[in-house]
Length: 167
Image 1 (tube, one colour):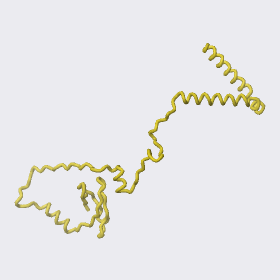
Image 2 (cartoon, rainbow, N blue to C red):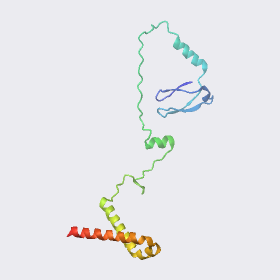
Image 3 (tube, rainbow, N blue to C red):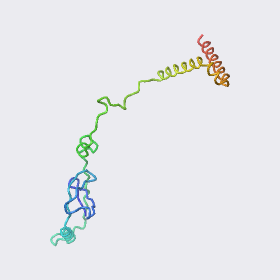
Image 4 (tube, one colour):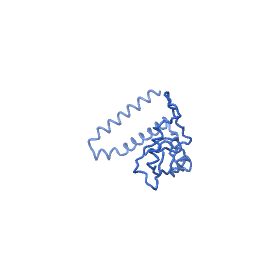
C-alpha cells in the first residue's frame, strides 16, 4: 500500500498486512508527523489506476511533459530542541551548569609552575622520608646500601653544581 504523509507529502510503501481494519498509527520518517492510517479499499485503487491510464478524449496528449520538481520543505522545528523532545518523546533536559552540576567547559586553573612546585615538594618529601628510614631499609635489605649511597652522592654533586652556578 502506498501511503502519503499529510504534512510533508512524502510517500511510503507499507505492507497491506500491516494496516488492519481498525487502523494503525504511522509516523513519517522525514518530518515526524503521526497519523492513523486505515486500509484503502481495492475498488477505489483500481478505479484511480484506470482513470490515470485512460486518456480523456477532450484533452490533447502532451508530448513535452515536464516533470515538476518537488522542493523539500524545510523543517520548521528543530528535532533536537528541548520543546520538541519534551512534547514528542517526554524527554526532559536538565541544564547542568545550574543547580551545582558539573560544568565540562570549566578551565583548569593550574599552570605549569603549579605542577612544578607540587612535583618539587613531592620529591623533597620523598628524599626526606628516605633519609629518615635509610638505616631501617639497609638493615632489612642489605643490597640496597650501595644504591642509596650512590643516590645521595649524586644529590650532593647536583647541590654543589647548583650552588657554584648561583655564585
